[in-house]
Image 1 (tube, rainbow, N blue to C red):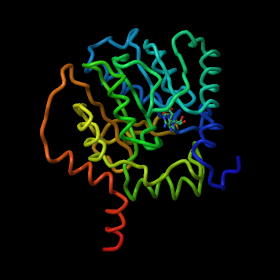
Image 2 (cartoon, rainbow, N blue to C red):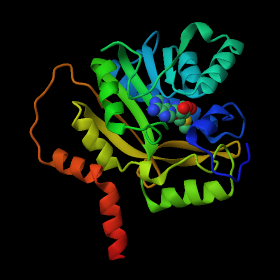
Image 3 (cartoon, protein in one colour):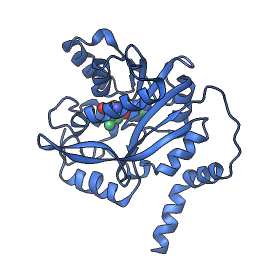
Image 4 (cartoon, rainbow, N blue to C red):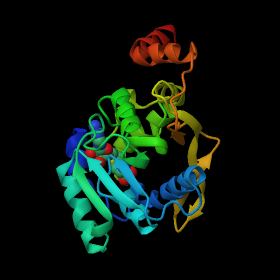
Length: 271
Ligand SMILES: C[S@@+](CC[C@H](N)C(=O)[O-])C[C@H]1O[C@@H](n2cnc3c(N)ncnc32)[C@H](O)[C@@H]1O
């Protein structure tokens, strides 16, 4: 693939170097899984990871599935890219993890899973790539068992994220950042995600920055922290019983999110 030409996200993920040593996603996998493990155990109890069946929505080449399987979980990974799934299956087989991970073709918007099947669902670096975010959140809520936990991370729609990940990342491709990988308009503001989650029966427990926390062997360690200007992480629970809540904040934020292109254009006309 020529790096300087813009490719579609489907093309990019079909030939992505998931397991390359320089791949940023791979370098952050341990840090991302530390966050998943700590929040899953916070909700479901210490040691709950052992034999817990977790769904990863948008598993790509299997980075998260493998690391979580190594920590004791049984993983199901769903992704629309057959090539990514093939890379994931081959890598899991080489690492003797094939018995602990099932890879399945599918889309976040219509998950090939039973209602209430999982106690934990994770979705890392995917929400900014799906076609329909609202349907995705609804599907995750559907397949999660009452009392279950949803852990996620994504990218904030800020000028800084645009500069770092699109302008700089696309002009100086490295670590898997290539032209076409990201669409600025698909980045998500934390308030928009919170609104969608709360409008889909989730109770958001945390939404916080995911930021550099020092260096280890030449690359940044990432972890939760105050700065949400580029990436952020969070977790939400699906209540054991459905609670009826009336709030004007959620519909307002939803209208804002649905018409964000208009509000962005309005802001640009004013500046
Ligand atoms: C940046 S990768 C993240 C992969 C993996 N979660 C990780 O963190 O290593 C984004 C993944 O989302 C997948 N994806 C894109 N659209 C999707 C959709 N509608 N439903 C599920 N996955 C999707 C892509 O195929 C790709 O594998």
